[in-house]
Image 1: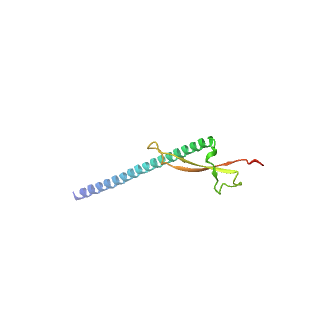
Image 2: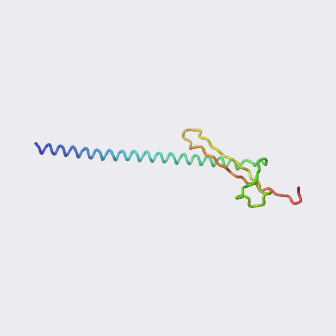
Image 3: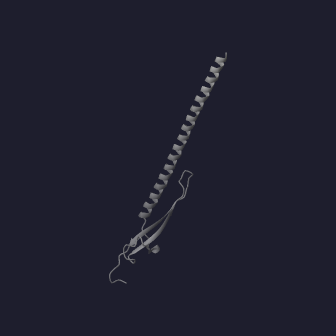
Length: 122
């Protein structure tokens, strides 16, 4: 009888160990799947934000420059002499309109404009 009881205890311990290993493997698999989904969602949000930013920049490039907000360009852009090169400082901002949107972002953009100087003109 003692041998049968010992075999029963050993079998129960073996079943508990195998169940614990299977449970840990399933838990790791579930966590791995959730991490993968979170990474995919983050990538989709980032690409969505970049796409919206590119659309804004394309719309900005299509709009004509207004001459009223022209200021001196910073030194990095001042390749030509100062009177001919004027810049416009533009600020682009996004807002999160839906919960799935990426975080709001902002961009400062210098838009240079090279004007022709007429010789002998005032």
